[in-house]
Amino acid sequence: MAKLFAIGELLIDFIPEHKGKALKDVVSFERAPGGAPANVAAAVVKAGGKASMITKLGTDAFGDFLVETLREVGVNTDYVYRTKEANTALAFVSLKEDGERDFSFYRKPSADLLLHENEIDEGWFSSGDILHFCSVDLVESPMKHAHIKAIRSAQKQGAIISFDPNVRLPLWESSEECRKTILHFLPEANLVKISDEELAFITGIEDEALAIQSLFVGNVQAVIYTKGSAGAELYLATNEHFTSSGFQVTVQDTTGAGDAFIGGFLSKLLEKGAFVNNLSEILKNFHQDILSFANACGAITTTGKGAISSLPTKEQVEALRDSHA
Image (cartoon, rainbow, N blue to C red; front, side, top):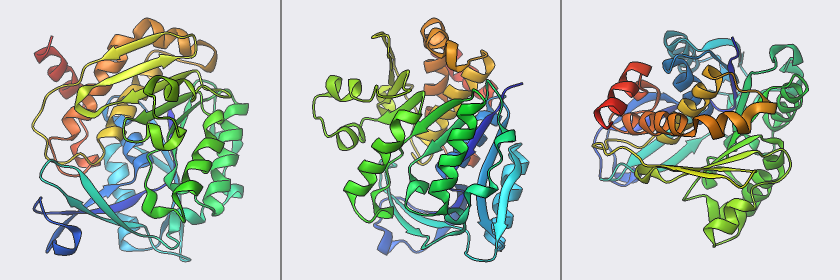
């Protein structure tokens, strides 16, 4: 069976026990496993698929906790390296009353940024697999070059490449460096997920339709445009366009909602036997099922605290979809 590989950051999110305070005013935090690629890998497994994580952690207690967490979920950790050269990454999060977040990261560098390209093995990947990556670990570091090696290796084996920029500007030297790096990696992807908050920043285009069309460069076959509780839209390079409404739920914490969405989306592609050469056809024929499933994954995740701990099972997703049928 084809599987997902997620490469990038695996870290600890420290989430405040009470919402509505600025980060400087938060007194107590709860520890939660996180990192967008890891969230996506966990989301795929919770939805019934297979997934592996590619990263590096410190030889510290936080690293031990993260490995144990992924294994408990069912994510393969054979490609999670450990190092004494740096600590496991940490992120402190403050939650506004509506569940939106502010971040403060501790990683200069963190262990994930020290994954080297020679630690990536071309033999890991097969045709029909999916390699998913984000932009947080594309800052200039050994990990950036590990991404390039992984993408080239996966492409050579016929795997689908999925990219969610997942912009986090505080981690970059400048916003322009972030934007240029995302645009450099964009043509490598077959599938791009972008949020309404990121579109104008990444493309430099205010007009929504023109901005989305500008993302169809290189290998890009499909763009998924997410709009939070308003749902998502799917655009194909064949000029076809599909929409799907979101699910109304009581929001606790939006951390990981976008990761849950794309994890649910990718799990459906694995389930339906998507390959690079039939990706557009699969998306066209099953867009309603795929988008509805992904929207439900994202919605359910916002009803709890933290990302991985709030990810829904396939049964929970189907129950929500049935209640809105």
